[in-house]
Image 1 (tube, rainbow, N blue to C red):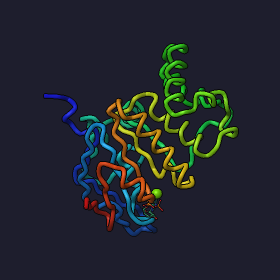
Image 2: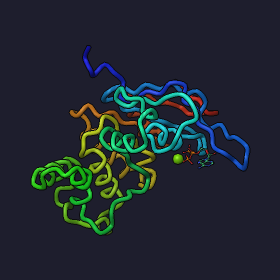
Image 3: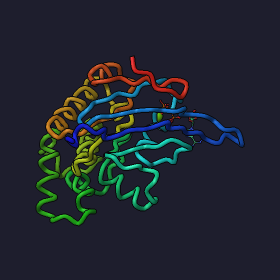
Image 4: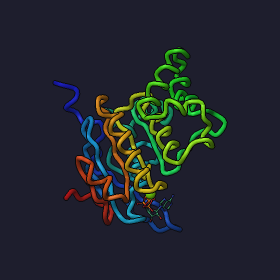
Length: 229
Ligand SMILES: Nc1ncnc2c1ncn2[C@@H]1O[C@H](COP(=O)(O)OP(=O)(O)OP(=O)(O)O)[C@@H](O)[C@H]1O
Ligand SMILES: [Mg+2]
């Protein structure tokens, strides 16, 4: 069977609660989700509806109460914690509202980092990181420190870093939440261009309906459940 027909991300009956002073807060209730290769999917919902919690569970950054999360055919929570971390770093990319770039390192060094950690050849790493920066329209910003970049440029570097190791899926939690509308649109334009030929799926949490409307699907999170309209 063609491997591309398998979901890159799937949840079955995912439930997540938090402890609120001895009381169980039910945040995610029986979520069934399938994300296919190359899909661009928005998650929308009011503040506190559990969007970030869902993304954390999808990425194995937070534990779940019951159900399962499958990434590229692997049951994430059946892996030992250490193996889960390695697997996650191989298969998924993360982008947040605030860039979390390393302040003392240049744009190029930040983007190279995920590959350097894997001890790949330095020349190869640098040329790959430069290529991604170029695709993000940042070729002439490669040597800039994060403090020498604009907000939109920083987010583009953060996206480049999340994608340089070619994950099957990018999980983005309000990556443009901190930017004005025009800059946000430009960042998404670059993101779409970058993933276009790579078959990388994107799950993006956003409050921006312009961005959501550009997605293949919009998932609404409400009362702990997902609705697709
Ligand atoms: N570690 C925690 N312990 C207890 N409750 C938590 C914890 N993290 C989140 N919550 C609660 O879970 C609910 C969902 O939070 P979450 O951060 O997922 O919402 P969100 O949809 O991302 O909101 P926003 O749009 O404001 O970012 C909130 O009511 C929050 O108070
Ligand atoms: Mg959130």
